[in-house]
Length: 349
Image 1 (cartoon, rainbow, N blue to C red):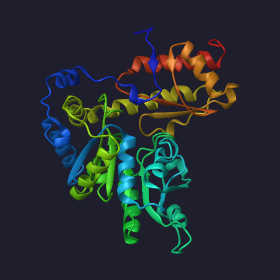
Image 2 (cartoon, rainbow, N blue to C red):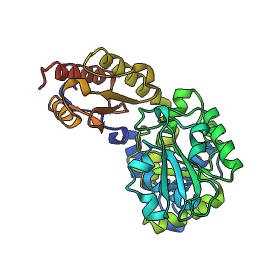
Image 3 (cartoon, rainbow, N blue to C red):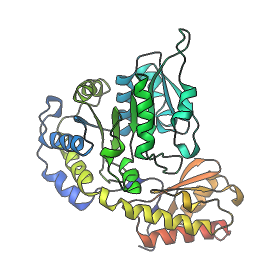
Image 4 (spheres, rainbow, N blue to C red):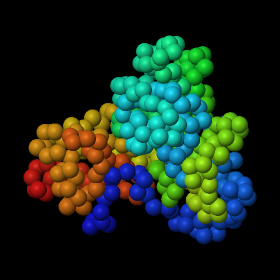
């Protein structure tokens, strides 16, 4: 353990648990394009029930889930309001423009959390030569803002105002279970008024592949068609859905451990004067680390950390991002802080 690589680049690096591997090997399967895979059908039914929505659809990735939702909620020539650091704006390859013919209208928000006072000025006026607003997209937790969370009340307020104007609201809930754990609530409460929700099974929940898109029965029926159009129709995919069922049922209960590890890591790193870390802002499993005072940019810092056995992600040239997850234990968290200490003090350079 002492010599193993500590991978804090993302919670996407988690390996499926032994129980998941057994379930995958034993999964009952059928052709899901014909709606005949019983394991996929169980996963979709269970996801819908947990989110208190009518239906759910298993998709290969969170990006596909988000883009299906955008395609269904909008018409070409419209705008999608999203937070400036949001995933659908920055990390989905302008897919909303390429696939749906819509444009992002990014809005900066403190800690990545939008409210109606910030959204209202970004709404397009009813003028024929302006692209109309077609959708509001939220992200909970907010990835690049450091795992910050929207409360149920904040989401409800945005949805109430949006629906009053006839605008749908989509939730990029890639880590929505992390948000629910941090707020001591449940995902159904958080997403009650959202028109659609995407959440990932393959991040903190540790499934090897897959995300879910939930909403009304009519929405999911249309989503299945768009999934097929995008090449996401899968055959005997129950071997993956079996792991997804375990991720959905069992893994949310352990996310509090990841959150505690993130807080411990942030606290230890905040003791290093060369780093800018704010433990009080760590709500979930993401720690943002400012490195401007180290004299290194992100690429150099990542290389120095890697040489000492620690893998880190980047936000920009002066900021790193660290994510705790199932495959990093408390001992490794302390060792990660020690590696940072050696590197910023020059012993690892």
